Image (cartoon, rainbow, N blue to C red; front, side, top):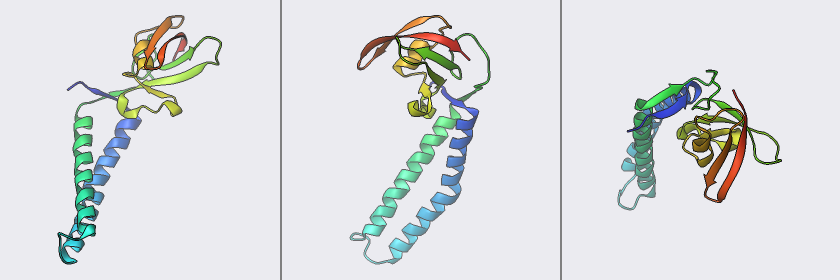
Length: 153
């Protein structure tokens, strides 16, 4: 399985979620299941069914996080380089539009609204290994466009 790129902050956040699910949420769901089982006929009990569904979700998320974190490669956002890599902050401009600023992160942390794009997204993939001054063609689902790399931070 290929590595998952995470910032230190993203790694810590996912680790906290995993710890919470293991220590708190599992116990809460187990208590709900226990109470639902004491409530009567299990076949017709909606609370029991809801608790079983929640248990499946929690266990699935725990497994997902364990795999994600086991394959994680922590990147340092503060590493300075003149080449775009995961962890880089990139200043770009499309045509005459205002400058946009993005930090390249792994897919698990991508949030374009917050300026964090995945290295696997069309824009992120196109920007990888580029330098300030490069013009990059981006093949996106809505069609191709070009951006100019203004600065790599």
